[in-house]
Amino acid sequence: MNITIVGTGYVGLVTGTTLAELGNSVYCVDIDEKKVEGMKNGIVPIYEPNLEEMFLRNIQSERLFFTTDLKEALDKSEVIYLALPTPPGEDGSADLSYVLKVASDIGEMMTDYKVIVNKSTVPVGTADKVREVIESKTTIPFDVVSNPEFLREGFAVEDSMNPSRVVVGSSSEKAKDIMAKIYQPFTNTGIPIIFMDEKSSELTKYAANSFLAVKITFMNEIANYCEKVGADVDKVRLGMGSDDRIGHRFLFPGIGYGGSCFPKDVKALIKSGKNEEFDFQILEATEKVNAAQKVILVGEIEKYFGGSIEGKTIAMWGLAFKANTDDIREASSLDNISILLQKGAKIIAYDSVAENNVRKLLGDKIHFAKTMYEAVENADALFIATEWPEFKNPNFELMAKKMKNKAVFDGRNMYPLEIPEQNGFYYKSIGRRTIEQNLT
Image 1 (cartoon, one colour):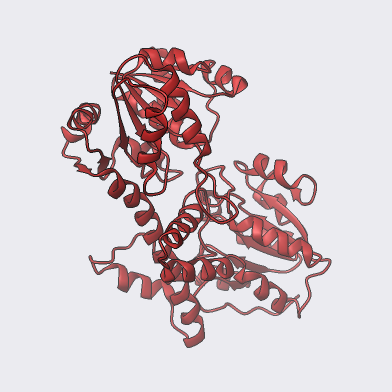
Image 2 (image 1 turned 90 degrees about the horizontal axis):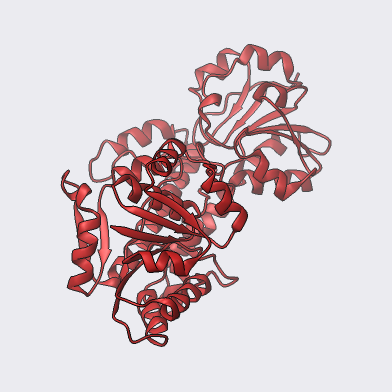
């Protein structure tokens, strides 16, 4: 089948490459000429493990194409996926201007039947709005479908090729048949395709992400309570997760959630509720708790240094909001950097993948190290903000020689407590016993 993807951001590029891998001819459209030219030359504009190999394979197989010309791609395709940004406005609502602008363009350009697929995360009722915009521009028949994505950054290729389910919202039997044909390679292997109405499909994505945000935040509250009463959150997490009604995933405590999805989607669902005079009280509490959780270790660092961190050098391992991505949107690292700088600390950070994105944002406000061990050279303390695999088994003896103070503030609970304890480190993590170590 011939398919057009409008927008080559994270969702659009992964979706387009996946659909090409399934045997379709896919035309990816973007207004950024430099980006399109780079993709034509095999340059993947985002960091995502295992994406480049699949991307190049489908270019070479002449199934994946790139263009800035929407009309050209539209004329070649029966199905048009909208994978456009829906950034939060000042009030938290999703900005649909990109989606509705492209819908208007499609209405003006289309010459035969099309299926318009909303792949972007959008509020309930967006399919109706897209339909209205297109209808105002053409009398040619078309259908609008909601088909939310459930990709995890860092695991997007795995998730796209082996989804747990495919959700399709449509009131058109013709559109349902077309979508079923696209996803037949999945359903042939037992992956379910769940058909529903458009509004239920749109809400499914917001509900799923918001529930996971709540789950993470609840575990962080349990972790903080563990510290008050002397319990160990790792043991609590294992005990809870062994209940198959709960499961082990998203029970890892830390310094809050971030990224492009959870913060945005929680805000948007809260705002959508208020538009209907409905208060999502749980989600409002989740936002409040998460905001505090992201910077919970700053107070611990101040306490360690007797109340002031002015003039102290803090090494930071990790800048991305999570491992295996270069995404720094809503990253906890940035919240902590901002406060630490305000309090007079100096930051030396290391993240080989996300560094460039932070450089663009912060310039020379912080320093960047070439290696994780260079970052801790003469540091007064180490702050771990991202759970990159390379941080899992560090050389604590080498760190002890390089650092001024053997102090680690771990926002991702990277190490069993006995490891820093055996190496004589002060070690503060989330929801576990603090390993005490006097200043040297």
